[in-house]
Length: 336
Image 1: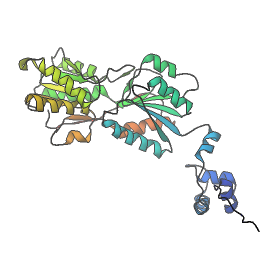
Image 2: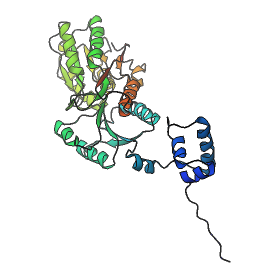
Image 3: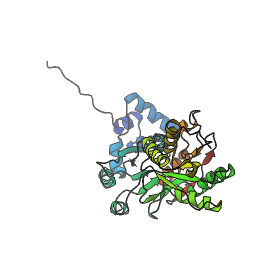
Image 4: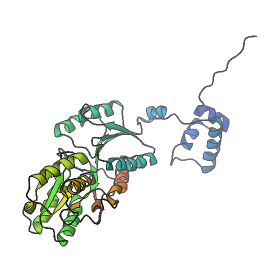
Protein backbone atom coordinates (compact mmCIF):
# COMPACT_ATOMS: atom_id res chain seq x y z
CA UNK A 1 0.00 0.00 0.00
CA UNK A 2 1.56 3.34 -1.03
CA UNK A 3 2.58 5.77 1.69
CA UNK A 4 0.25 8.72 2.07
CA UNK A 5 2.05 12.03 2.54
CA UNK A 6 0.03 14.75 4.24
CA UNK A 7 1.28 18.20 3.31
CA UNK A 8 1.23 20.82 6.03
CA UNK A 9 -1.01 23.74 5.17
CA UNK A 10 -1.36 27.12 6.81
CA UNK A 11 -4.11 27.35 9.39
CA UNK A 12 -6.88 29.71 8.31
CA UNK A 13 -9.47 31.81 10.12
CA UNK A 14 -12.07 29.26 9.01
CA UNK A 15 -10.19 26.49 10.87
CA UNK A 16 -10.21 28.55 14.05
CA UNK A 17 -13.89 29.44 13.60
CA UNK A 18 -14.91 25.77 13.22
CA UNK A 19 -12.88 24.72 16.25
CA UNK A 20 -14.26 27.59 18.37
CA UNK A 21 -17.81 27.23 17.12
CA UNK A 22 -18.02 30.85 15.96
CA UNK A 23 -18.18 32.67 12.64
CA UNK A 24 -15.11 33.65 10.64
CA UNK A 25 -16.01 37.30 11.25
CA UNK A 26 -15.85 36.73 15.02
CA UNK A 27 -12.29 35.46 14.55
CA UNK A 28 -11.44 38.59 12.54
CA UNK A 29 -12.89 40.83 15.26
CA UNK A 30 -10.86 39.02 17.91
CA UNK A 31 -7.67 40.14 16.16
CA UNK A 32 -8.86 43.71 15.50
CA UNK A 33 -8.12 46.19 18.32
CA UNK A 34 -11.20 48.08 19.45
CA UNK A 35 -13.67 45.84 17.62
CA UNK A 36 -17.06 44.85 19.00
CA UNK A 37 -16.49 41.50 20.74
CA UNK A 38 -16.77 40.35 24.34
CA UNK A 39 -13.56 39.70 26.24
CA UNK A 40 -14.71 36.13 26.92
CA UNK A 41 -15.19 35.41 23.20
CA UNK A 42 -11.87 37.07 22.36
CA UNK A 43 -10.00 34.95 24.90
CA UNK A 44 -11.64 31.75 23.61
CA UNK A 45 -10.71 32.56 20.01
CA UNK A 46 -7.16 33.52 20.96
CA UNK A 47 -6.66 30.30 22.91
CA UNK A 48 -7.68 28.13 19.96
CA UNK A 49 -5.75 30.30 17.48
CA UNK A 50 -2.61 29.89 19.57
CA UNK A 51 -3.07 26.11 19.76
CA UNK A 52 -3.59 25.83 15.99
CA UNK A 53 -0.77 28.28 15.22
CA UNK A 54 -3.03 30.75 13.44
CA UNK A 55 -1.92 34.28 12.60
CA UNK A 56 -3.97 36.77 10.54
CA UNK A 57 -2.93 37.20 6.92
CA UNK A 58 -2.19 40.92 6.74
CA UNK A 59 -1.87 40.85 2.95
CA UNK A 60 -5.34 39.40 2.58
CA UNK A 61 -6.69 41.91 5.07
CA UNK A 62 -5.13 44.79 3.15
CA UNK A 63 -6.82 43.63 -0.05
CA UNK A 64 -10.16 43.61 1.72
CA UNK A 65 -9.75 46.98 3.44
CA UNK A 66 -7.81 48.66 0.58
CA UNK A 67 -5.15 49.72 3.09
CA UNK A 68 -1.66 48.28 3.47
CA UNK A 69 -0.88 49.66 6.97
CA UNK A 70 2.49 50.67 5.53
CA UNK A 71 3.94 54.18 5.69
CA UNK A 72 6.86 55.18 3.46
CA UNK A 73 9.51 57.18 5.34
CA UNK A 74 11.87 59.17 3.09
CA UNK A 75 15.31 60.04 4.48
CA UNK A 76 18.15 61.90 2.74
CA UNK A 77 20.77 62.73 5.40
CA UNK A 78 22.07 59.62 7.13
CA UNK A 79 25.27 61.46 8.08
CA UNK A 80 23.11 63.18 10.71
CA UNK A 81 23.24 60.69 13.59
CA UNK A 82 20.13 62.26 15.16
CA UNK A 83 18.21 60.68 12.28
CA UNK A 84 18.55 57.28 13.96
CA UNK A 85 16.86 58.64 17.09
CA UNK A 86 14.08 60.14 14.98
CA UNK A 87 13.56 56.86 13.12
CA UNK A 88 13.42 54.91 16.38
CA UNK A 89 10.72 57.15 17.83
CA UNK A 90 8.71 57.36 14.61
CA UNK A 91 8.73 53.62 13.92
CA UNK A 92 7.80 52.88 17.54
CA UNK A 93 4.82 55.26 17.30
CA UNK A 94 3.74 53.70 14.00
CA UNK A 95 4.01 50.14 15.28
CA UNK A 96 1.92 51.00 18.34
CA UNK A 97 -0.92 51.64 15.89
CA UNK A 98 -0.27 48.50 13.84
CA UNK A 99 1.52 50.45 11.08
CA UNK A 100 4.84 49.47 9.53
CA UNK A 101 7.48 51.87 8.19
CA UNK A 102 8.99 51.35 4.74
CA UNK A 103 12.34 53.17 4.70
CA UNK A 104 13.33 54.76 1.38
CA UNK A 105 16.84 56.19 1.15
CA UNK A 106 17.14 59.26 -1.06
CA UNK A 107 20.64 59.71 -2.45
CA UNK A 108 22.61 60.61 -5.55
CA UNK A 109 21.10 57.82 -7.62
CA UNK A 110 17.58 57.80 -6.18
CA UNK A 111 15.93 61.21 -5.93
CA UNK A 112 12.62 62.34 -4.46
CA UNK A 113 10.74 61.78 -7.72
CA UNK A 114 11.83 58.13 -7.78
CA UNK A 115 11.03 57.77 -4.09
CA UNK A 116 7.49 59.12 -4.50
CA UNK A 117 6.87 56.81 -7.46
CA UNK A 118 8.31 53.81 -5.62
CA UNK A 119 6.13 54.45 -2.57
CA UNK A 120 3.00 54.96 -4.68
CA UNK A 121 3.57 51.75 -6.64
CA UNK A 122 3.78 49.83 -3.35
CA UNK A 123 0.42 51.35 -2.38
CA UNK A 124 1.52 52.71 0.98
CA UNK A 125 -1.09 54.53 3.04
CA UNK A 126 1.03 57.67 3.50
CA UNK A 127 4.46 59.18 2.82
CA UNK A 128 6.49 60.93 5.53
CA UNK A 129 9.43 63.14 4.60
CA UNK A 130 11.70 62.91 7.64
CA UNK A 131 13.75 66.10 7.59
CA UNK A 132 14.24 66.04 3.83
CA UNK A 133 14.51 68.93 1.36
CA UNK A 134 12.69 68.77 -1.97
CA UNK A 135 11.91 70.97 -4.95
CA UNK A 136 8.51 72.56 -5.56
CA UNK A 137 8.13 71.00 -9.00
CA UNK A 138 8.97 67.55 -7.66
CA UNK A 139 6.46 67.93 -4.86
CA UNK A 140 3.70 69.16 -7.14
CA UNK A 141 4.34 66.24 -9.47
CA UNK A 142 3.91 63.82 -6.58
CA UNK A 143 0.61 65.35 -5.45
CA UNK A 144 -1.73 63.74 -7.95
CA UNK A 145 -5.25 62.42 -7.35
CA UNK A 146 -5.14 58.98 -5.77
CA UNK A 147 -1.56 59.25 -4.52
CA UNK A 148 -0.77 58.74 -0.81
CA UNK A 149 -1.02 61.81 1.43
CA UNK A 150 2.30 63.53 2.21
CA UNK A 151 3.56 64.68 5.60
CA UNK A 152 6.73 66.46 6.74
CA UNK A 153 8.35 65.59 10.07
CA UNK A 154 11.05 67.64 11.83
CA UNK A 155 10.89 70.49 9.32
CA UNK A 156 8.35 73.16 8.55
CA UNK A 157 6.33 72.71 5.39
CA UNK A 158 5.84 75.77 3.20
CA UNK A 159 3.11 74.03 1.20
CA UNK A 160 -0.37 74.56 2.73
CA UNK A 161 -1.55 71.20 1.35
CA UNK A 162 1.21 69.27 3.13
CA UNK A 163 1.01 69.27 6.93
CA UNK A 164 4.18 69.22 8.99
CA UNK A 165 5.04 68.50 12.61
CA UNK A 166 8.15 70.30 13.76
CA UNK A 167 9.89 72.04 16.62
CA UNK A 168 8.91 75.71 16.85
CA UNK A 169 11.88 77.52 15.30
CA UNK A 170 10.78 80.96 16.47
CA UNK A 171 10.36 79.92 20.10
CA UNK A 172 13.62 77.96 20.14
CA UNK A 173 15.71 80.71 18.58
CA UNK A 174 14.29 83.31 20.92
CA UNK A 175 15.39 81.19 23.91
CA UNK A 176 18.82 80.53 22.39
CA UNK A 177 19.54 84.17 21.49
CA UNK A 178 18.28 85.50 24.82
CA UNK A 179 20.58 83.06 26.64
CA UNK A 180 23.60 83.99 24.53
CA UNK A 181 22.93 87.74 24.79
CA UNK A 182 22.64 87.43 28.58
CA UNK A 183 26.13 85.87 28.58
CA UNK A 184 27.53 88.95 26.83
CA UNK A 185 28.10 87.54 23.33
CA UNK A 186 27.71 90.18 20.61
CA UNK A 187 29.41 88.77 17.49
CA UNK A 188 27.20 85.78 16.55
CA UNK A 189 27.57 83.52 13.54
CA UNK A 190 25.24 80.85 12.17
CA UNK A 191 26.27 77.57 10.52
CA UNK A 192 23.81 76.18 7.98
CA UNK A 193 23.48 72.68 6.57
CA UNK A 194 22.08 71.83 3.13
CA UNK A 195 20.24 74.53 1.22
CA UNK A 196 16.57 74.09 2.07
CA UNK A 197 14.21 74.02 -0.89
CA UNK A 198 10.48 73.50 -0.34
CA UNK A 199 10.96 72.74 3.35
CA UNK A 200 12.17 75.71 5.38
CA UNK A 201 13.95 75.27 8.68
CA UNK A 202 13.37 78.91 9.59
CA UNK A 203 16.05 78.72 12.28
CA UNK A 204 18.54 81.01 10.54
CA UNK A 205 15.89 83.65 9.79
CA UNK A 206 14.57 83.74 13.36
CA UNK A 207 18.11 83.66 14.77
CA UNK A 208 19.05 86.81 12.84
CA UNK A 209 15.77 88.54 13.72
CA UNK A 210 16.22 88.07 17.46
CA UNK A 211 19.83 89.29 17.34
CA UNK A 212 18.61 92.48 15.65
CA UNK A 213 16.49 93.10 18.74
CA UNK A 214 19.75 93.01 20.72
CA UNK A 215 21.35 95.55 18.41
CA UNK A 216 23.25 93.11 16.16
CA UNK A 217 22.53 94.14 12.58
CA UNK A 218 24.20 91.30 10.65
CA UNK A 219 24.92 87.65 11.44
CA UNK A 220 27.56 85.98 9.22
CA UNK A 221 26.55 82.65 7.67
CA UNK A 222 29.03 79.79 7.60
CA UNK A 223 27.62 77.32 5.09
CA UNK A 224 28.54 73.67 5.64
CA UNK A 225 26.31 72.49 2.80
CA UNK A 226 25.43 69.21 4.53
CA UNK A 227 24.57 67.84 7.95
CA UNK A 228 27.94 66.18 8.17
CA UNK A 229 30.73 66.53 10.72
CA UNK A 230 33.42 66.76 8.05
CA UNK A 231 31.47 69.39 6.14
CA UNK A 232 31.24 71.41 9.35
CA UNK A 233 34.96 71.08 9.96
CA UNK A 234 35.76 72.22 6.41
CA UNK A 235 33.44 75.22 6.63
CA UNK A 236 34.72 76.49 9.98
CA UNK A 237 38.33 75.78 9.00
CA UNK A 238 37.95 78.00 5.93
CA UNK A 239 36.28 80.75 7.96
CA UNK A 240 38.95 80.79 10.68
CA UNK A 241 41.82 80.73 8.15
CA UNK A 242 40.39 83.69 6.26
CA UNK A 243 39.32 85.82 9.23
CA UNK A 244 41.61 87.74 11.55
CA UNK A 245 41.16 86.84 15.25
CA UNK A 246 39.94 90.35 16.11
CA UNK A 247 37.22 90.11 13.45
CA UNK A 248 35.97 86.62 14.25
CA UNK A 249 32.59 85.71 15.70
CA UNK A 250 32.49 85.02 19.44
CA UNK A 251 29.59 82.52 19.34
CA UNK A 252 28.51 80.03 16.68
CA UNK A 253 24.95 78.70 16.56
CA UNK A 254 24.61 75.59 14.40
CA UNK A 255 21.50 74.19 12.72
CA UNK A 256 22.07 70.86 14.43
CA UNK A 257 24.34 69.04 16.85
CA UNK A 258 26.35 67.25 14.13
CA UNK A 259 27.57 70.59 12.81
CA UNK A 260 28.26 71.87 16.32
CA UNK A 261 30.38 68.87 17.30
CA UNK A 262 32.44 69.18 14.12
CA UNK A 263 32.93 72.89 14.78
CA UNK A 264 34.13 72.28 18.34
CA UNK A 265 36.58 69.65 17.18
CA UNK A 266 38.27 71.72 14.47
CA UNK A 267 38.31 74.90 16.61
CA UNK A 268 40.11 73.11 19.44
CA UNK A 269 42.46 70.73 17.65
CA UNK A 270 43.53 72.82 14.65
CA UNK A 271 43.31 76.39 15.93
CA UNK A 272 43.83 75.95 19.65
CA UNK A 273 40.69 77.86 20.52
CA UNK A 274 39.16 77.49 23.95
CA UNK A 275 35.45 76.66 24.20
CA UNK A 276 33.71 78.89 25.23
CA UNK A 277 36.34 81.52 26.13
CA UNK A 278 37.50 82.07 22.52
CA UNK A 279 34.48 80.66 20.70
CA UNK A 280 31.15 79.61 22.22
CA UNK A 281 29.14 76.98 20.34
CA UNK A 282 25.46 76.05 20.47
CA UNK A 283 23.81 73.11 18.70
CA UNK A 284 20.27 72.00 17.96
CA UNK A 285 18.53 68.60 18.38
CA UNK A 286 19.44 67.40 21.86
CA UNK A 287 21.46 64.36 20.84
CA UNK A 288 23.03 62.27 23.63
CA UNK A 289 26.57 62.85 22.31
CA UNK A 290 26.16 66.56 22.99
CA UNK A 291 26.14 65.87 26.73
CA UNK A 292 29.49 64.03 26.77
CA UNK A 293 32.04 65.91 28.95
CA UNK A 294 34.43 66.25 25.99
CA UNK A 295 31.83 68.36 24.15
CA UNK A 296 29.55 69.66 26.96
CA UNK A 297 27.46 71.24 24.21
CA UNK A 298 24.63 73.65 24.82
CA UNK A 299 21.79 72.54 22.58
CA UNK A 300 18.07 72.88 21.97
CA UNK A 301 16.29 69.56 22.40
CA UNK A 302 13.57 68.81 19.86
CA UNK A 303 10.50 67.01 21.31
CA UNK A 304 10.88 64.13 18.86
CA UNK A 305 8.72 61.64 20.78
CA UNK A 306 5.82 64.10 20.94
CA UNK A 307 6.36 65.09 17.31
CA UNK A 308 6.21 61.45 16.19
CA UNK A 309 3.05 60.78 18.22
CA UNK A 310 1.38 63.89 16.82
CA UNK A 311 2.14 62.83 13.25
CA UNK A 312 0.77 59.33 13.84
CA UNK A 313 -2.41 60.82 15.30
CA UNK A 314 -2.88 62.63 11.98
CA UNK A 315 -2.28 59.39 10.09
CA UNK A 316 -4.93 57.67 12.22
CA UNK A 317 -7.44 60.52 11.65
CA UNK A 318 -7.52 61.35 15.34
CA UNK A 319 -6.16 64.85 14.76
CA UNK A 320 -6.88 67.52 12.16
CA UNK A 321 -4.53 67.32 9.18
CA UNK A 322 -2.75 70.65 9.58
CA UNK A 323 0.77 71.80 10.47
CA UNK A 324 1.79 71.77 14.13
CA UNK A 325 4.66 73.56 15.90
CA UNK A 326 5.81 72.17 19.25
CA UNK A 327 8.14 73.78 21.81
CA UNK A 328 11.37 72.04 22.80
CA UNK A 329 13.84 72.62 25.63
CA UNK A 330 17.05 74.63 25.88
CA UNK A 331 19.82 72.63 27.58
CA UNK A 332 22.58 74.96 28.78
CA UNK A 333 26.04 73.41 29.16
CA UNK A 334 29.65 74.49 29.25
CA UNK A 335 30.07 75.33 25.53
CA UNK A 336 28.28 78.67 26.07
